[in-house]
Image (cartoon, rainbow, N blue to C red):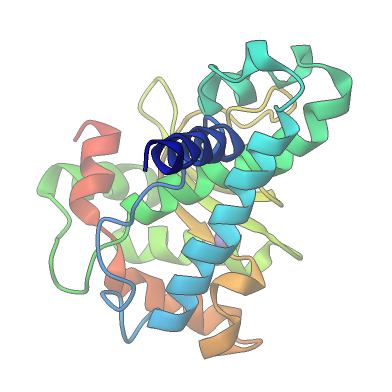
Length: 224
Ligand code: MN
């Protein structure tokens, strides 16, 4: 029995080391919670398949650099240029993927559970003219991104709100990205995010997204 317990402890310790520093966060809702706008199967594959792979590959990339293993994903991305050359691409893609998806899960909520605060609405009206015009600009950024990437609503330090898109898993933390500002809303426009339900109709997925935005979280992130 003792020997068995020892074996079990060794297995657990090795599992922890194999798993590494970065962990897949739990979703703040169930896989089916965003139905019918994002289907349960897509959510499950997206979270337990795609996001988990970014986390595992990030941990693998850092395996031979123990001093980097205690860094947060945010710090890794901010200091990407100073990392060892042979891990920069892996950290850019997988660290970016981990960061962006962790962000994305938080800014969604089951339909009808949150609404835009007056403060957030005022800011949107100030910088875009109206909520509809903001949505139009965001949809344009999301549908206009060729290939895989993300659409973002960003808040600059002077308060300005604007929308942009980035390719692949790039984001504003990365040094070669000239876009400035804090992300307060994002949409994943990789095909894996919508293909099962919407096939090639990215625009329909982008329109459906408005039903499941967590406006309370967006307001909180923007300080409204
Ligand atoms: Mn994704």
